[in-house]
Amino acid sequence: MPKLDEYVRIAEAAEYLGVHCNTLRNWGRTGKIPEYRHPVNNYRLFKVSDLDKLLKKTEQSVARRIRKPR
Image 1: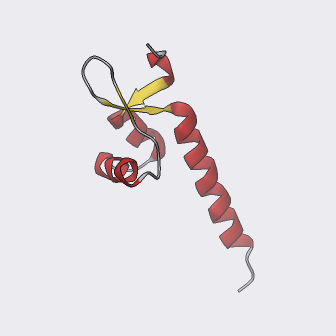
Image 2 (image 1 turned 45 degrees about the horizontal axis):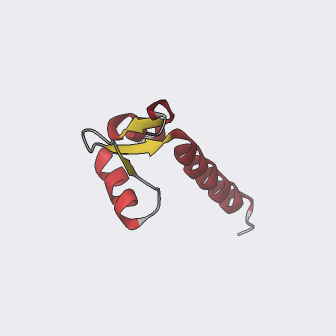
């Protein structure tokens, strides 16, 4: 069984990213972010490291747009 302390539930993940829970569900469904299931109750779980990667990728994308000459 995986270490569950490396995962957060959808409400915590949505707050961490600053998005609505439904947005996170859509991103999981479309593969933008991997989602996992709790082995006992089947709740949607997200790895904190995956959330951090998504934030970093988003920040880099924004930084590139800001630096791009118009």
